[in-house]
Length: 160
Image 1 (cartoon, rainbow, N blue to C red):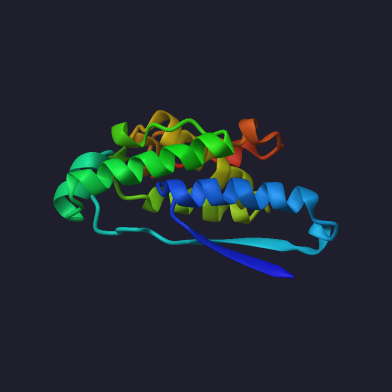
Image 2: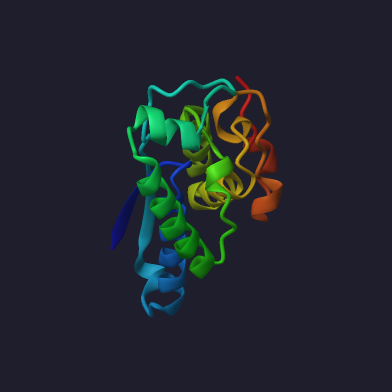
């Protein structure tokens, strides 16, 4: 069976869903027969890149037009989902920025059958650290190879 997952690196729902998927696969007797294919989806490709962006709060209030009370409710809901999944929640301090370079890194990792590992590393870093440069700035050397426990470390450094 082939499972295609469309994801954006800065989406907390996507990362939490990936954790749930991994947990489900650990319990599934035929997990070795399932092929996971990661597909890129940028929530907003018009966001600035190269280390620029907006605070998530400003972006959701001003650009997306979300009312403040709804934003607080959404953050509380995501915080509970994150807690249940064992993920640190720091979305209110995050930056909304273009994720093209991060998606390019995941595509490169796919050539070594490591897209899921690299996606997890980047996605985990984004809500936890919330540094816009992690996924929107080329040349930061977002090197996850050594952390994935594989021998392809040198292949996972984005430099443009």
